[in-house]
Image 1 (cartoon, rainbow, N blue to C red):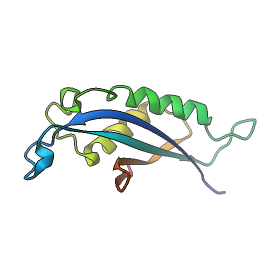
Image 2: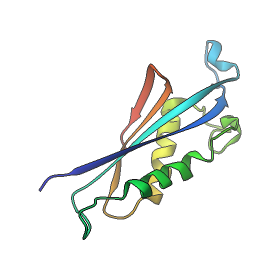
Image 3: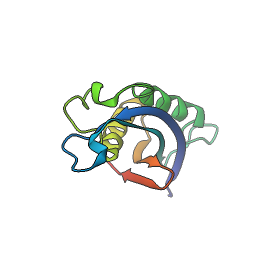
Image 4: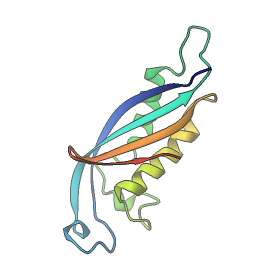
Length: 123
């Protein structure tokens, strides 16, 4: 039997600075962060859905809401962990894993820091 994958996108606007970075990104700056999350599973529900698009969008928006219009460095764990795109992707993935329904798993989180630069994380 095959596997189904479902992907949704969200975004947030926030500022950050990278701890110990040897260039300009050590200074305070902001981004419009685009985030894509993909979940996967093999079992469909009674009406033929893996996981409702609306439910996954709601899960993603709830997680991203912590970071919208804030200084990310002031939000745990980024008060001690550098808020790189890599670390954001991992932390977002972990938060989503706690929210999504059983029977689906988070397989990838992609964080776009700009229109031409992204990182992907697979738990």
